[in-house]
Length: 331
Image (cartoon, rainbow, N blue to C red; front, side):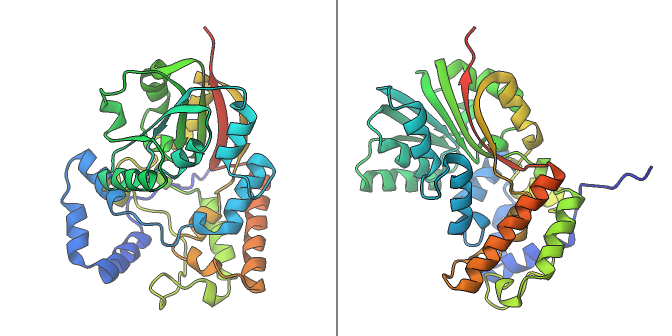
């Protein structure tokens, strides 16, 4: 029997990524990232400087597809869906968002009067600063804190709702994390809402994913493969090297492949829906900005790509992202 290796220490894609980062941001940027030695400094540095210029979630047709899977309506985001389905008959709820980033989801929940308290915590000070600014501009009373959640001491209260939006997969030993850090701060019958990556640890894409993504990439017209610099083309999808992953962001997907099992083991499932991300996540990274135009060719191509990912998901029975609502089990 031949076993195919499905992890990479260093890949050609690492060198290509470093090359383009030096071209666009300079050597000073690269060295400022490399010479941060503590875990917290490397993680916070990644998210302090992060901007989503060309990731697949910026494409409206893709977010509409996710909304359709979750709520059945392309224009209805999951925050509205959850509030209407689970919280309409409740009042004075408290919500904690762990890994809140710049606070978009907390602001969406804060539109509903059922929430008395909303708290957001994130390891990135820059993200928290932006979240506070945006909440203030919208005149929303949301409490934001910059902290490593696992080491926080300021949370004394218990919460009715805990939210993870692309943040739970950044914790290692997820089962232990849920038991020790999340369950103790939840009220009885409290809810956990997740919108999460649950694919291979450290983004070590499977060979089948890479093969399919590259097959599709080869057939995309050149104008849709232009990188953010406007000059070069994306020619191949690579698995990121583990060394680069650990240097840039040691919190990225250390235990993601166990995320779904950990949720199921610790909570009652109210609903759980597969979002895919097997192909489009890796295929469109760096070229997603080319699909924002409203012309017929762009719309048709992105719909074709969405269908190809669905075909891959149905054939492989694999899934790299979920939306779920869970409830604390009664003892």
